[in-house]
Amino acid sequence: MNNFDRKTELIHGLETDYLRVLYYDFNGKYKGEYKSYEYNRLCTIIDGEKKVRINNDNDFTYTNEEFVILPPNSTVNLEINTPTKALVFEINNSLIDSVTKKVCTEFENDLSCDINKHILYEKVNPIVHNSIERILNTALSNEKNKKFLVDLYAQEMTYNLIKIKSVHDMLNVNSNNFIHLSVKMMKENISEGITISEIAYALNMSPANFSAKFKKVIGISPNEYFKNLKLLEAKKLLKVKSVTEVAYDLGYENISHFIGLFKDRFGITPKKYILNESNDKFTRSKV
Image (cartoon, rainbow, N blue to C red; front, side):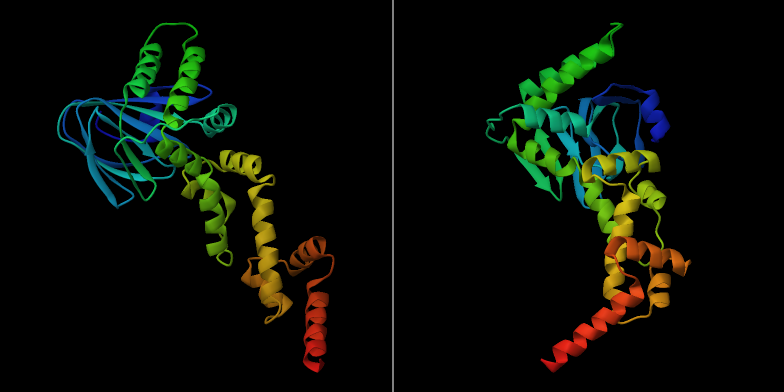
């Protein structure tokens, strides 16, 4: 294996309803960069070791005695100096949510761990190791129903992981991480003409997948959410700018379209809103 891209990852793997199981076999030295996508990753070593730098701020080397929880949308600089076999699980957010909601978790004492800027580096305990082994053996087997069995073992693995408090907190913080990141991008670029497709690609997600997952969590589409943010911003800007200036500032080239959206959202036209604001200021100044 001499390169790291999404196509290569998926060729060397198995995808079920709950997991993507990705297998890597580095025969010699390797140095490069890759990105994680919309799910949390459980990164493990079968044999060998990895030296990694995560999000330009976390440097460490790990072997088959540790695992790493890698949050969505991370950038990893990877260096391998000895033959290494690695196994990575992309854990579907629905699995994390389902297991967390259905079980009553009594947290075990945390093992030695390091949570640094949302990166978790933890010792592998025997129970988690056994779950990983069952998934690996099943994924490599000729069992006709192996995807079904892998999902059963995935539930077991996730249950055993969330019994460790640091892992529980990490997985649940990151399960909807893309929502927080996307909203942050919308707010920071509200006057820059950024599109939902550009936000999706920045998060390493397809626009369709991003839109579906966003709506599932928030209840409305990202387009609708972004439109509402813009209209709320419009109310602020209309206190100091004209209707035309605000429309252009927020990326609406069609002034009539902006006026229609504003009226649908707030029940009055932008011009009427400005007038009301002026009257309110005049009234307050006389009190």
